Amino acid sequence: MAPTADTGETLLTLDGVDLGHGERVVLPRVHLRLARGERVALLGPSGAGKSTLLAALRTRLGDTVAWCPQHHGLVPGLAVYHNVYMGRLAEHSALANLWNLVRPLRGPWGEVAALCELVGLDGLMRRPVGQLSGGQRQRTAIARALYQQREVFLGDEPVASVDPHQAHRLLGLIEERHTTSVIALHQRELALTRFDRVWGVRDGRLMIDAPTSTLSLTDLDALYPDADDTVPPGETPEPAAPSPASLPCSRGRA
Ligand SMILES: Nc1ncnc2c1ncn2[C@@H]1O[C@H](COP(=O)(O)OP(=O)(O)OP(=O)(O)O)[C@@H](O)[C@H]1O
Image 1 (cartoon, rainbow, N blue to C red):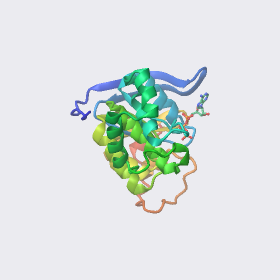
Image 2: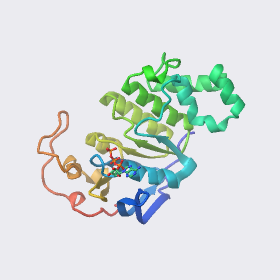
Image 3: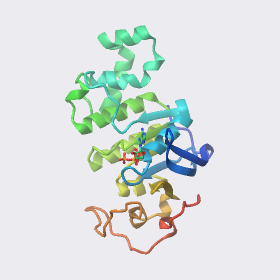
Image 4: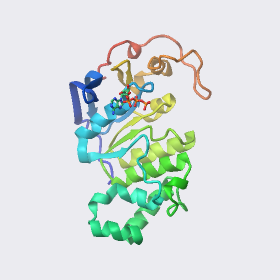
């Protein structure tokens, strides 16, 4: 499905909603808006609530979402082909799915093969996922999400286990095939270069909600309590001057 043009139309609004698990509130009174056409990077330290927020978006956006979970959710004993095919399991009859397990259906096989080539898994279609490297599993999970052909891509650290070159390439594929995306990640530079907006969570709140054009690496550092003054290799140091984005309140939308 080719993405439609950015209309800026609101896809989802959270207006003072408590997000958490059962009785446990992780992110109280969240206010945010997701617009159609936006590419949002979701940042924050481990345990800050990124997965919690993604789960809330997924629930609310329903069938429009292609979902790429943090731990992949793949079946190790099944081949790459079958794991990717599972992205559209519900579109086929039980009989067709059963048959496909024994003898892959011609149409889906061709479609999955094309996707596997795109994500760099060509030649691995018949290999059980349990025999893949971490990066190969991650790309299988991305291929399964792409195969779903939905409007919105939600990914929980989908490029955490691949090299920087592959990360750019995979994010490019996700961009091409989805109108809107929200992706949790830890690579701050990727967040600034490949996304329109950053949502940053820390200490139980949305600390940053701002266009990337207004943010610097220093702003993003404020999300990480243990960050020292060392800039990771390959990232350009930023001046330490504070900006509004690092102030301890949710940024308004620009
Ligand atoms: N199913 C659950 N039931 C209760 N609490 C949970 C559950 N899942 C996560 N939590 C808690 O919610 C908080 C936020 O977790 P979450 O997984 O959303 O963080 P995260 O930012 O995605 O972390 P990471 O980067 O490590 O994946 C944590 O304190 C975690 O212990």
